[in-house]
Length: 363
Image 1 (cartoon, rainbow, N blue to C red):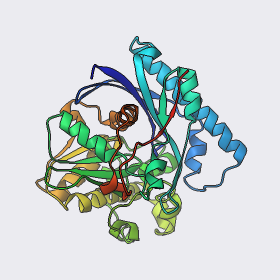
Image 2: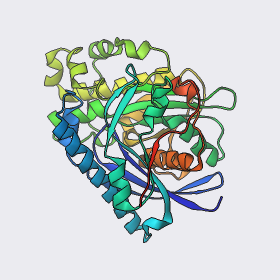
Image 3: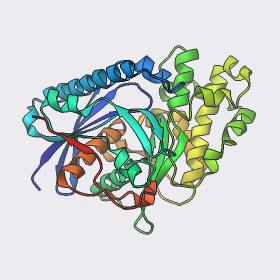
């Protein structure tokens, strides 16, 4: 296969922006050409929907249109930054922004309509990736493990835990000796970000500096760890509609919000513990991606809990940790464009491999 360019668009559960990634594919090789972050419209309203899930049809339609326009503009800006033309892009993959993820219903709702993206950019657009898997009985998440495997092999690596720490954290175990596995472990950055924004006058805990100022509260930590999700075996997935402020308030005393730095430190520890409890199931190097890769306190605590398994980030392999999920969407578009089924049966519990996503023509 000749060198081809795909774009991946992702708005994660943290609702902190749209990531647009330009990726070149050639044979088994993939190369990140560039990454661009675009403002996410209606971010406050989208975050509120993590707390309460009621929305009017008028508001839903407005969000669909406005986010579609924003994803399209992110694409055009990224292309312009690299002095390219839309016709040089083979296709793009858009994850959209998740409003509601309900594996128990076999349905997941993402917004940012792909028709708007395709028509505004003129680029063939693949989107709505999760529901194909869910229609076959799968969880629809995580989607990343097969891409993690492809990325790892492109670096001539055969075995690792790939750990994505976004709003929710997930792990993928890639090993030549076991079937591909992956699942959501629980909260990532999302709960910590909300405490920072509501009580500490900052968007997030840069490098984990605030969390490092306090000792985790063990009583609060045990109350959170008692949630049955953490003991549930894979396949499993979760979203911010589950791990949110209402979830915290149901489990912690009111005094927790009077000590926001202690609460932040406790949530940092919660992410580290729940990741370590999963990673310790098999010995392999640990490679981190996502926004949590920048949280030094979190990575230090995780390293302490997993002992001799080395904790690294994708930056150690010349790939921006913040680009991995955008690259995933570009890869999903490439797989759909090639007509290749994606086999997530061992990850999500779906009954068979299938082509993920629908296609919207750019012209």
